[in-house]
Length: 429
Length: 179
Image (cartoon, rainbow over all chains, first blue to last red; front, side, top):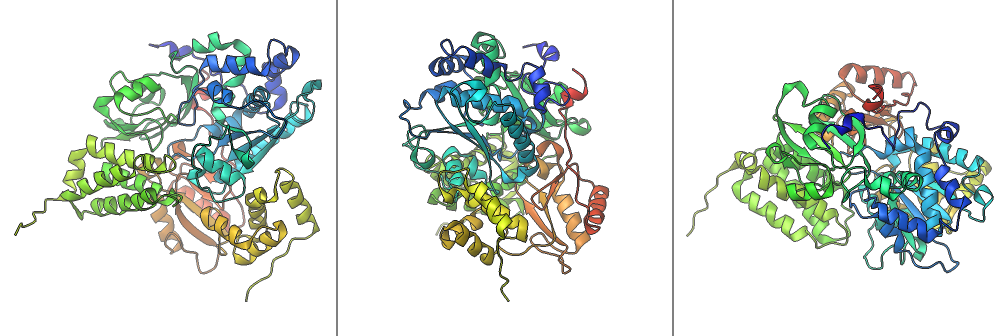
């Protein structure tokens, strides 16, 4: 990577004024990928589009990092009954604020990507699920969708072909869990967002029991790039095992927080020190949460040479998540921080599975006691025992997401926890 | 003194459009609750009953949905609801300082409403504006970012005068440098 990033020109959100207007997007190669596909449907049969996207290895940008094209290939053969694409703009993982940039600055690239995905999977109805807190951004996206309908990119017989697709926005109402794909489907069906037991997977039985694929907004915004330039070109951006551009959301104790677009695999210290202007107030770096609240925090001394891609972060002891990087300076109280993360998961647990419903509550209570100065050394063992009883024992990954920050923080910042705990001695009779 | 709520013909036409987006009526529960809350200011049991009758979905189901999603208000709230984010990035960038400042200024605690019914205050989970912390959201709508005491003072004056905040755009820093 070295210094190549300095000359990098953004591809997901290029610096073009008024790109959210369809006329400006069209002037800048917009909807060309869709036109190319519909013009030559022999070369670009749905199966070939799926293959091209699969080869490009667009790794899902919502957190799991699964190959998007491979996910598409799980959809069964069409049987003439409805099939759905649900676009995940729930973006509720603390530290994550990237998809809203696409809605505001380049919504058409996402819309084009979603239309191509629908074509590739024989889908005729697309739902865009967006968190309720993003109302102003939903309105922005809706305006772009209306423009796309007016120009014939959405609706019946797109660009004179026999391919038709509808796109609807659907606003959530404040529930983190609805970013989990099966919970998102429940919410779209008008219910409480309770995750579903898998299998059956959404591709087999999704919305209203029909085959459904769920993709993140940023993931879909990558699709027109692949279709315009080819998978070979795309694989050249960033590491081949985790290629493509990434929206890095950098927040916390940095001088220039914000969303930045660079290739995947950026050096973490470069992102903190050069891209985001370094730690505020000349303070020292204490820790980094690399990809949203559920990804295990890394101590500053663990960041040497680590890059923002799945492999490097796994080796370092964390995960890419949503690339929502929270930078923490030397004054950060880790116990206070982890308590607040636990408070979040306690609030957001849907309550369906006992280990999660009860476990998140106990983590929160125990950490609250600790941060208030009433903790005892044995509470650290209790916290780890609670984590053990949550991880892998629930329908969805929320319990794991709640347990990891606690487990890994105790592991990596044990001295800070111990400092807050009384050394109690219990008499043995 | 339970109030009664009704949808007029125009409302019903809008609701018809909302339900048309889905293969079955129940899917429109969230959009119709949003529509009702925008109109009535909350989703209390009387509003839930109206939504239930309009969509033909059991009242118990609507009640379950309202209680699950934090943005639906199951009782009337202040004219302006201030949702102050105190989660993660906002926590470490002074979210609680802002919350406590507003508590002091309005003379209420988080979770309460001022006696004149002008303001409700809540401490909320991540709103997705982490780079612009500390921040708050006004009544499920616009975000007010980079909060300072001065900015809070002005916001509260504006809201008292009936002026809602404008949409604040946060451009990509990369674009500003022209790189």
